[in-house]
Image (cartoon, rainbow, N blue to C red; front, side, top):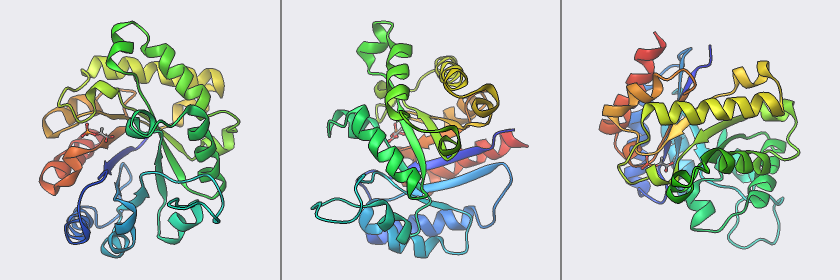
Length: 256
Ligand code: PEP
């Protein structure tokens, strides 16, 4: 059975003090590893090290929200894979809708980042998802196929084993509008079929596919209870232990 991953994307929020305090609360919630549920937090770059310190000795994993694809060198403002590893990161989020639609990242750029992260030993959470007008135009599956094709270009089955997919419909991110469990399950099922045809059924059956988009305490259980939903990528609700912990608890309950 695939285990759950409950990941918090703090985006450009927190400061050193509040980030460390939040990390310490999460460390207390996930003191020891559990077979069925992994907890991950992804703070902004400047707080990776103090957050890593606060998580020490706990079972909470650490991730970054982006990375550049080049090796260290003359790339002002960029952060390399080696640097994230050096800060204790195990994961990096790539292809988030804000990187795609605010910063203008293309599938080609995302793919270069995916391959660089995998080469350097980071696990990747590759985000895909359609805009509202694409859903309304019946284009959801086509958009997902294009983003999967582009993001996973030249990624072998062995390397893809270090990837988690996050289905994040753009219209549900930070809007308070959540995909229904049926909408999420249908997109996840489609993604799993895509993975089967690109790789194979065994591989596809093992891959974690997270849902992201206004996940909260009151909708987590119904979303995570879908058979192809293996966890959540959580933005707003991950900024307070009081709203993030119930999502972890929902995963724990479903795992039992
Ligand atoms: C996200 O940032 O990936 C996200 C899903 O945000 P929110 O939970 O706030 O919709």
